[in-house]
Length: 141
Image (cartoon, rainbow, N blue to C red; front, side, top):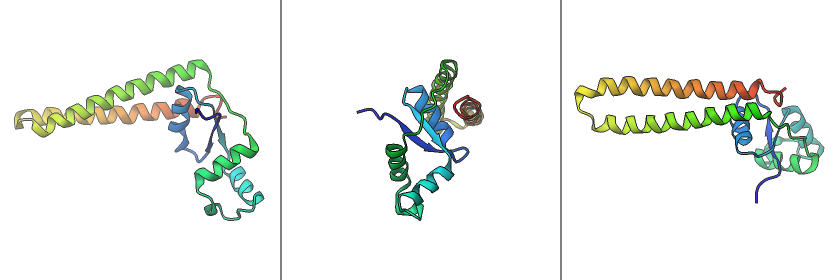
């Protein structure tokens, strides 16, 4: 059974890749202000947020409050899909190059190390662009 809504706490950065991934696979999500979660915990008698596991608290919040999902525009979703596919491809190349490095003769190791460094930087750049795309979308605001 597919979830009807995924509730994320807006911490500032950790929810960005999750929200973007949810958007690319078509799952509705709502990013909620942390203050709302703390107020909710108090309202249901959980004065310390630690009395709930964070996921349980967010699930309970979603069940009772029904925050409004903020769908991303199609053009943003398409960009996120392209970035995710490219990232997956680069990660696959990185894994291949790292496995080659273990067996490579000394003559090739420097070249492989250079390529691995390039691919690692590419993954970082793709992650940053993915997060920026989510952050600057209308749903985030």
